[in-house]
Image 1 (cartoon, helix red, strand yellow):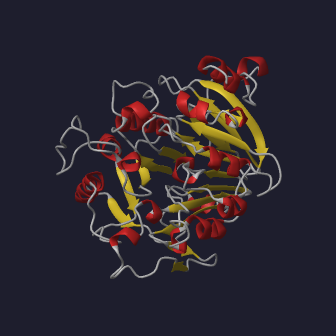
Image 2: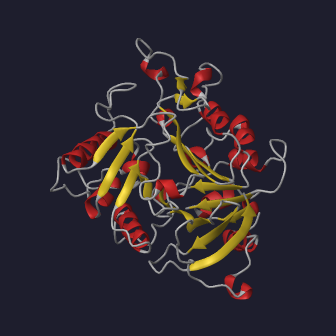
Length: 411
């Protein structure tokens, strides 16, 4: 077996990108212009956060994770550990919405209520002066800049499928109440809705853009209009061990811009407990409702219980994003599924964030097929959505230096 240094060098050399200096390209992101869709997958090494700039300048942040526990299983914090991850996310958001002359978030969507998506409370998390919550993850964003609309899976009572017990989830609900008290419109996501996450600035100018909520709490869009149906049975009287998990209740969203399609589904999974509970595979019906896409974010960080064959076959993207932050992200079996030509034909590129050296070693057989293993991953889609380009951005400072580019890929 290769030693660690040799293997990491091999994995880096296997990147499909040509260095920008050899291609005569700039090492800065191209300026945003009206009509461009830009998707920023932010690599803090501590959880999920994705900033999206719509073609009309609408700003959307999906998740703002901040994990603290089990630090030995995580990569080094990015840019570094001098600030909490949520604060780094807030700074990234402020910097990049400033590029398009915006100073507020139109939309913040939290896919579900786990700490690596909304913020984990640690002993060092400060108490807020704005409400009865600790400042972590999404709270840093909400306190750093105005948020017009916040969408989550449970507002206002957060009672489905059962009362919350996780202190991180409870802390988030207190944040949501404070945001509502300070003027943010907080809403529960509605499966099938094409308006909740839609364009806010100039919607009439971009009729070929659509943002659809595919699923939430097991309710899945049915493909026509805004109708949905529940894939979960009634929970009344259900044993606690069989209830839908927080991950299973994640919000899933599909963006459509001309020919470009993008899927993201939080921590949806397909673990049926060895077939005992078939309905626990919620990612498969969601993927079927979504249909083929140009790019997909791997559910649940590419963990062992997500992106099963049915979901991969239904989505069949040209590019996958794997939002890692833990030594187990992604699982080797999941990588094999994402790469399998048995599930759909054609080339595909896999871009990972936040992989650890240990994860690279465990995934030695397939890791050289990854186009990236760390760094912010920025996707740009030109007007009309005919193709897309992927930029890898250095996460270790705030200069937003582009280190590689990939594509353009046809949508």
